[in-house]
Length: 298
Ligand code: G3P
Ligand code: CA
Image (cartoon, rainbow, N blue to C red; front, top):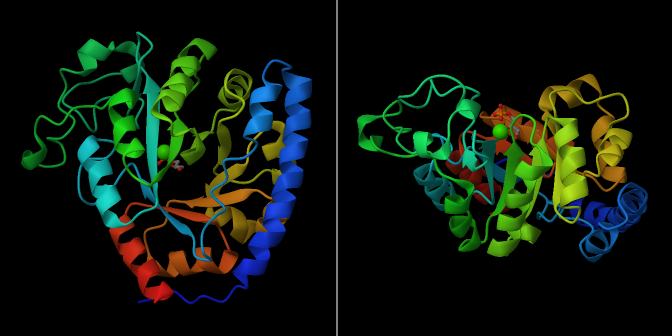
């Protein structure tokens, strides 16, 4: 069933573009204060906002398309691209020897034939694991992808990516991630997100021109100030945040911030997200949501 489309979006987005420019200026001032070396880079590319949709939220495929293939694996991201999702969401973690790999849980047990904390394993150890059999025998032998294995897929598509950094990342671990993004030439299509504020601050320092997103289960009292304090152009949060604080969406929009809600898998919740005027919806059912969005567009 199509979603109901009620909001006067074109006007809202043109207002957002001018407020976004204002936010970019503020962010630049913040960077100048925070890290002088970084400022020139940030000035060239102030925002990497998702706020470019046509009035309906973008479909953000959560860990790829987990309805079609094991989460955070290459087949899941290939399926997500086929699903019609415009944004791929993925989780990154650092291995014991400093490589970035796509993986959600802190421990290997649920989605591989290994066990224990992923952070204690080297890349070579992780590459011996099966990350597909838990999902179905057809997926036996599927491996945990490295970030550098994932990037060509993004590069060859038109999709954007919401890259969530799980846990605390050191500057030494962040630098190769940023470098790989620039090498692949996808810097304008990615937003790096984290629940961990120290990681966002380190990322701001190390790669100030890459767009950042704060991820929070519940919005803080002043979400605009919170985003600004972390140099974030995007806020990722739950739908519940806006049920508790109905004016928050408008405040975030007025500040030029992009709003993504997670993780919604039902049509009634998708409609609530449309009514709120959010920019993107993270879902485990990207094919269904993309189909509903297409039907609404007509
Ligand atoms: O995009 C945010 C969302 O993915 C955070 O939740 O636990 O699925 O990574 P989680
Ligand atoms: Ca995630």
